[in-house]
Amino acid sequence: MSLDAATVRRIADLARIAVTDQEVARLQGELNGILAWIEQLNEVATEGVEPLTGAVRMRLRLREDMVTEGDQHEAILANAPDRADNAMGSFFAVPKVVE
Amino acid sequence: MSKPTDLTIAEAREMLARRALSARELAEAHIAAIERLASLNAYITVTAERALADAARADDRLARGEARPLEGIPLGIKDLFCTEGIRTTAASRILDGFTPPYESTVTRKLWEAGAVCLGKTNLDEFAMGSSNTTSAFGHVVNPWRRRGDNRDLVPGGSSGGSAAAVAARLCLGATATDTGGSIRQPAAFTGTVGIKPTYGRCSRWGIVAFASSLDQAGPIARTVRDAAILLRAMSGFDPKDSTSADVPVPDFEAAVGRGVKGLRIGVPKEYRLPGMSADIVSLWERGAAWLREAGAEIREISLPHTKYALPCYYIVAPAEASSNLARYDGVRFGMRVDPGGDLDDLYAATRAAGFGAEVRRRILIGTYVLSAGYYDAYYLKAQKVRALIARDFETAWAEVDAILTPATPTSAFAIGEKQDDPVTMYLNDVFTVTANLAGLPGISVPAGVDEGGLPLGLQVIGRPFDEETVFAVAGAIERAAGFDALPAVRA
Image 1: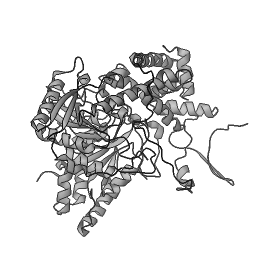
Image 2 (image 1 turned 135 degrees about the vertical axis):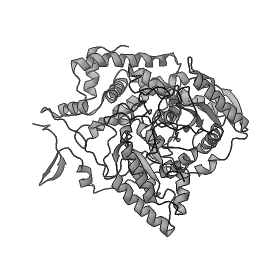
Image 3 (image 1 turned 30 degrees about the horizontal axis):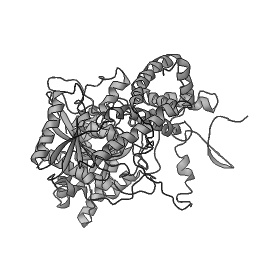
Image 4 (image 1 turned 90 degrees about the vertical axis):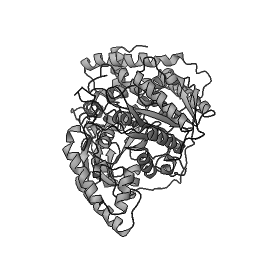
């Protein structure tokens, strides 16, 4: 499988990374190089093999459904690039999403 | 007496305990050394004031006879561990201005054990790299130099700052992380000891995530014993990490001198790569001979899927990275670039400006292999190959107690080499990546030098949660090798 420029643009769009036309051309070459190398995995017979999702087959633990570290409002907002403080409270601020 | 910066952790601990040295003197000597060798660029942030305050508290405790296991020991912290109130960068522009309001579990444990914080060490951006040249804060210079060649060499990566700082005596030990070899490869390139423990041994909580099913924290130090001392303090169950293992932490230090009599050591034939340098081949043979002389039995074993480990890794790791790095969106922390459009434009502009070339490349590969229509062909296939790689090791453990391999296919290379295409750089991790995929402990021990006088490491891989055997074998190699070469640049 070889990526064309439109596919590189589509992936970049899915990944929310802006790319210039020049970058698309370079990335196309680099990504195709990596994918060509990765494709040697097709030599491996994997019929009936259970995929390994983690380093160890462990069952995830459950804990009591209760608040352990609540009331961290200011700590959470402390690194915000932009915030809005108004009568309703304090928020992360972003460009207008809904007209 | 040797200079304070030349001490091992074990020696410093003993001298601090009998008050032959103060934690303050030790901290001051290291702060001065870091300033003097700032050109190595091993640290991104130096926390001199914090170090002196930590040292003062340590001296109080030592005076009261209440010393904890690492009381007064000055450490460097890879700048991938979140440290409360201290800027944390992951060597990326996208975390500009980020100061964590919390402390990673591993560093919290180190401070609770009495360690002194010297600062945050440099790394490849988001721990993605094998040369420490992808850092937004500039490359790190390896304190070693090739004989007759004055070019600056890479310290390896991604924990290049930690490894260079330990080798150049800019700390007594350092934390590091390893997703495909990022502790063991830089340790091998700098003549230091680095262990990636079993997946689940150290909590991942508060460590900037790269590939969550592969990431493990571990120490880099100058001796096997020092690595054992640090790993014990870093390890332990943490309910905040869902994959943290609820198992007891043994006294790793006690295992270092245990010897290898009666142990069966495997030498995997698939690790003998075509075109491997004569230096590496003879080092590996020498390592096996040392262990045989120390009473171990050497057996050739087969790990048939070895050759597929790296391509498997370069699907799994970027896939997980593309998901983990989705959080850097310019909204909640770090850099924001607002081109004046809608929210999607803000995300795309921020991420284009904030991530370096290698990180962008891996996010795109990861996004592609997870995208609709390609998931089965790439990601699911890689997970199945990963299962076969893990099975190779499970089969081997029926025959052997530990596995001996070279740590890296070459010694340190010059800055700027191997940059022609990404895959050439990826091949650095050919011997180390299998232990990440299978979740196994692996250590790199300096065992000799190549024809240019540069250090080479041997790797010992062990069974899950059997770091003690790994330390025992590494200790035997260290004693037999008598590695005493020193880097050209050091405090």
